[in-house]
Structure formats: C-alpha cells, structure tokens
Image 1 (cartoon, rainbow, N blue to C red):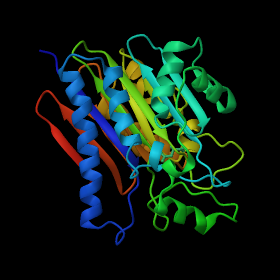
Image 2 (tube, helix red, strand yellow):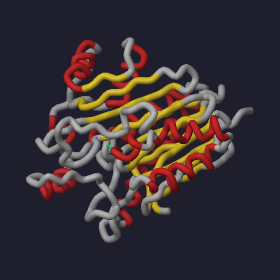
Image 3 (spheres, protein in one colour):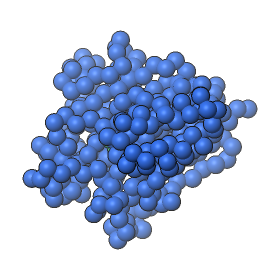
Image 4 (cartoon, helix red, strand yellow):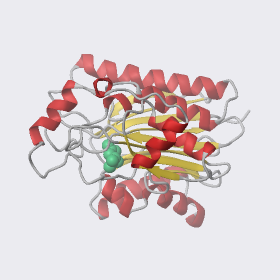
Length: 309
Ligand code: ASP
C-alpha cells in the first residue's frame, strides 16, 4: 500500500527561555498531537488530503495557543484580522481569504472560496459578505480574546512597531498554523491560517493566504505550508520556490525545502520555516529559527511532535 502522511505546524520561533514552562510545553504538544491524530485518522479512513488538512488546521484554529482563529493576535485597532488559504494538489484548485473578522475557522471559508465561488482570493468586506451569504455564524470579540495576546499588544500599541511574534524578541513567537498531507491515492494538499502580526495596520496581509508564497500544492511536486516573516516569504515566493526546485532541478522535497529555508530565505533576510510533503508521502520540516511547533504522522510508523531544534 502507498504511504500516506500528514505534517502540521503551529508556527516557527518559540517562547523565549524562562517563559516556556513544562506545563505549557505539554499543552502545546498535546494540542499538536490531537490535530495530527484527527488529520491522520481521516487519511486512514480513505478521506482526501484536502479533508485532512482542513480538519487539522481547524483544530489548531480552535486552540488559544496558536496565532490563528481563536488565538489570533491583536491589530493596531485592537481587533483581529485573519488570513487563510488552502490548495488541492490534484486539481490546482485553491482558495484564500484575508482581513476577515469574527469567523471561527478561516480555513473553512478559504475552502468555500475554492469550492463555492468562481474565484481564488477574497478579501475584507467582500470576503465577509461571501461568508454571510453562506450563513457563517460570527463570533463576537470575546471569543478571540486572550490575555497573553492582549498583553503583547498593550506593550507596543502606541508605537509604530509591529511584532512578528519572533523568538529573538522578548516574550514572543510566530504562531501561524498549517498542515500538509498526502492521501492514500497519492493526492496532496496544503492549508495555512494566521492572525498575522501583533499591532499590524493598514490592511497588512502576510504570506499565509497567498498561493505560492505561504501555501502551495501540486501533485507533480509538493504541498507546502510556511510560517515566518511574511514580507520576506512573499518576496521569496517561498512555497512555489520549493516546488520549482523540485520540478526544474529534480531535487527531493527534503533538499528543496532545506535549500529555501536554510539558504535562499536567509540570503534575503527572512526567517521562519515550512512543512512539506510530496506525492509519495515523504515529509520535510526545516526551520531556521530556534524552534518550530510541529508534528508528523505517517503510515510508515512515524509519529512525533516537537518544538525545539
Ligand atoms: N507568516 C505570517 C505572517 O507574516 C506570520 C507567522 O508565520 O507567524 O502573517
């Protein structure tokens, strides 16, 4: 039987030492393991890679621990603006949403854009109108309130700085979530969801909802979900770059992912990581930060979650 597998991430960069307690570490690992198990279970039952990545990302969005859905960071105006995307490697169908508010599971709205509209990318008020027409229930602000995120925001709210939730900075980390999977038919898919950066303004959008930058899937090469300094991941067209190295240079998913994360993105000043899977179920999870919340589970017996390098 063909190998089927799933990998997930909860963001690159980690809490600085001293802030990560054994209890918190256990909570992160348990949230990662549950999302991994649910996604894997769907694959095991013969469901598609798209079903598996949507389900895994939904579970991570429902946890306050990660910067996506429920745990999204605060914008400069003390609101939450979320971005998400999903792509099917078999058909190249894709959906993305950005600058949405009040939606519990942005990844599901991205999937609806892919399947129920003629478009690929909907943003802001228009995306919210689309959600309304599909009868999405809106959560109020209290659903997204998290004391830790609020504190992060209070510290920089009246400044021009925005925080990329990063390990080199005080008390912060990336927290974007994502999943990639290869199903029993050898079809692959990727999904990514984020609250973006603390104190972001002017309708700032990162790489996460952008097909080719933060998320990409093509059965011919790989499925990718990125996390890191979004502006650099957009400039480096990171997810597609990995696919291109595989397609045009014949590199393996492992070598191509490493080349992009440990060389190309560093060369232009970006940092972060990605998760990748090819249509044979091989997984790569490189990062150039101190850690990346991550996990992988495969029909060949691998089952692990990890945080640090
Ligand atoms: N890449 C995301 C963004 O720039 C941030 C992250 O990965 O945490 O919006």
